[in-house]
Length: 411
Image (cartoon, helix red, strand yellow):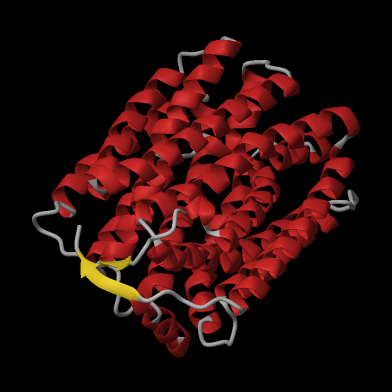
């Protein structure tokens, strides 16, 4: 047991002080984001919106995320990642407190568009900050630590959220979400003030830097990632409804199943990534492995005979997520050295926004028209298409000659 504990703690060695603070800020922020896994249930069961209406509200959510990721990437290269993150946290907190008072369809669509635009404006900035605060050889583990913080927050959030719903109602979730965003902003000003912190990895300038949308392998990679995202986001919209409608589970039980995702990541992801880094797999190959595992989890959902199958499916999907996301993040960060980091990471974040735009809507519309079984088959098909695109990217990268850096600059 001592050896296992020592090996686990060794995977965290060498990470910078700034990365640890950034992880804590992320943990506080994500622990408060407990309304998100229950959003489709809240809109459908509490506010009595139809599934098609819920789908369009979730599409507004995705459109806001898309706009915010684009704006955040642009602002990162203009005013810097620190200011972008701070503005995002403050105004996201204020908007969570506003959204809880909205009940009409069109205002709800507009409100979630604004909320997610503000929230996801900070996503590219977090990636750029992570890159700046981490030595090149530690970037994958730094990414994994941030994801660990996100998922520790997500493991606490749904569990506490389910209890809050049962005892105090949905309003309590919005208050907690808003206040935790504001607290994370205050903490950031105290521990990551630019005057007191240092960047460990300066931006490498490339002669004739590429625009991300003209980088063909990168674009194909992001299209595959968007398809993967469409598959994965179902675990936060269609799948909770499936748990409730087909297995008659309450919000507290659903919260615990969703919390399992975060708990598994907290316990296993860091050692898993440290182990996989020793294997002879590229970032793209690791992303493919995780993609196929997550897609396979929906094959299990085709059998509606035993409640335990949904737990097994969640476990398989979680291990797929653990493998794919850190290495896809690392691929994007490495690729961003071909141009401006903010623009590259903004487009990377936009790929997940596309998943929110089309994923929730398509999942619910297909479910409403044809049922859950057809939805799972559709998602399995998307997984195979994403796999094919990533295979093409892998072949293209094998024939690519890396550009030469011409100078080093600091922001």
